[in-house]
Image (cartoon, rainbow, N blue to C red; front, side):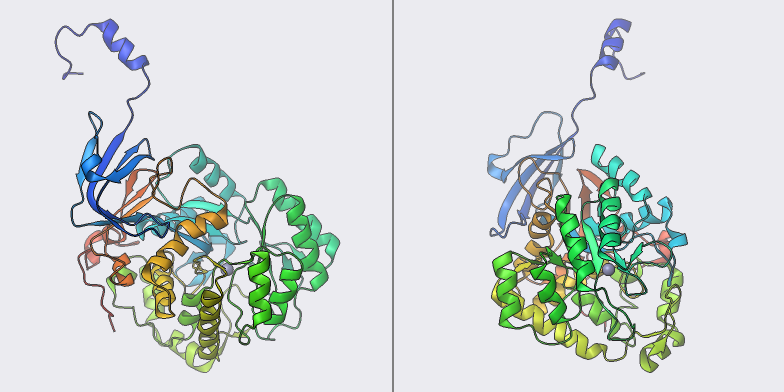
Length: 475
Ligand SMILES: [Zn+2]
């Protein structure tokens, strides 16, 4: 008030208070723009964001900055859309332990903020959410979130005694009727998608979802105008699920090479490889994770997680195989034979790239061994390692994933879309690892703390490294 000029009367002040708040406008200019659609990068670009939306984007020379706009000079920087991870699980971990009792609003939001810190501004949670996720989603969609946007499958469909879901959360079904009922319940809650699991953990579990049950779940999802996405492992199951109308796969086929029949089916039906989860398969094949000293990794995980990953216990589990993970009802050989599985996933990924099927970017982050946000960068690096260009990897994680989600308001830097953006110090098209040089992240135009301003569960000075760090292999 003391800044008001003398003579500005009470009536004027009252009038001002009654007016709607002035639009919040920020101009970003001078950067090279990678818009997420696959279009060539544009040097010397500018954009205007007003109240969280992109209201103009184009060459800096044509910029007409509105009066009163805050201007950020990004000369020498690179701007791409916020990344979308199409396969995650949130809120279920505390350090290395998975348990649904940890699923609190606080833990969910901590994960969503970690994703955003890594430039992942949207996530699709595949089947392990408690109902409080609908409140989080509702608030996000009514306003301008300061964390990753959440899309949810609610509680995915698990076969009785079979693989998938989280102990104590997911409904287990054994008949088509039960599957239809489970899908009806999720649809009534307003899920974005239906998830089902068809696997037997390489025959470690005696039962697997029957085709009659998967067929019922997929049909029922479609009755509710929802898409169905399936966890798969086996080639034969993938084919049967396509015949049943499944819309996408949450993992790569990993039991054997994919064949022309599968590729042709995916092409002709438009079936998506939503999330190949290559970084997940890699994580399982590593006895000692090579990024334990990499600040891009260590900043985003808790001290308890780091301690566990560096422990002999974990190394022993990796090397010797059979272990009982907390929260799992059965003992499984988590790591045994994972090298072959990783190789098969990569080989099949290459076949799908070549065939031109719909490919998203998803990691299965959340559970043990796969880390919120960090894995999205690993996943894009693996995509490039396996033959895609950095531009294609970025497109899969942005506009392609938005297309999978069916959300036209995110996924690219275009007029009318949300200003979900990542500012990078180095060019990711030169080296995909440059996606790690995160200088700023915006969600709906809100600047949020980046990973380089994060030191999860520790004082900020306990972490090292900066956005200028050269992203070389830390091992
Ligand atoms: Zn998953």
